[in-house]
Image 1 (tube, rainbow, N blue to C red):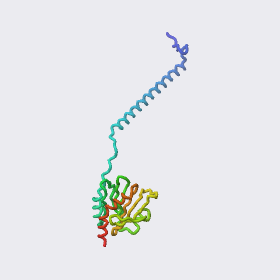
Image 2 (image 1 turned 90 degrees about the horizontal axis):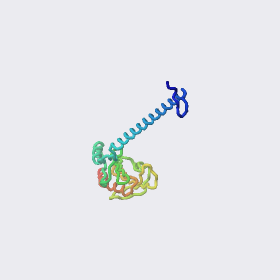
Image 3 (image 1 turned 60 degrees about the vertical axis):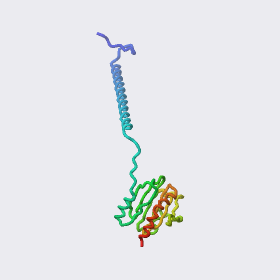
Image 4 (image 1 turned 30 degrees about the horizontal axis):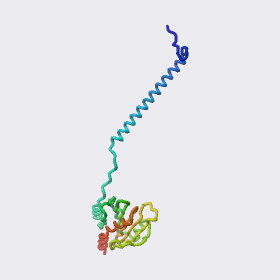
Length: 208
């Protein structure tokens, strides 16, 4: 019968404790190796899933919503309140982002190539409505556009969270018309005002 196995490193047979320790170390090394392989496999699977999602899902810029049909909205709202609403004539490249009735105010919002322009029609509003809407800013002067006299508001030197830098206001019968914008030259606001000339005259003629 063969005697106890002699371990080369020891030059003698292992004791029972040494055998137990060796087996425990071997088991621990195996478990550690298996855990690492499982972790690596899981990582590779995760990377593969992310790659499929990234390369497989179509990407691109979000489609911009269609421009608002200001004339159509104005016709609908006008019939419901029995009052003429302004539909500005503006350059073709100006995008209409909004047209809505806010209480006593008909508001149209345009996005020219740079900045923004708002046209607000105060229906039956009291005196001082335009300055209040601008944050209680007093007129800085006046300007005549196509025969229409406008109060002029220049706010380029003031820090405003709404970004408004220039505005024009005038009356049209029982209405007050306010054209204002920001991040653009005053000429852009004046262009919008020019597109209201005929309608402002009509509103003035309709009011006794």
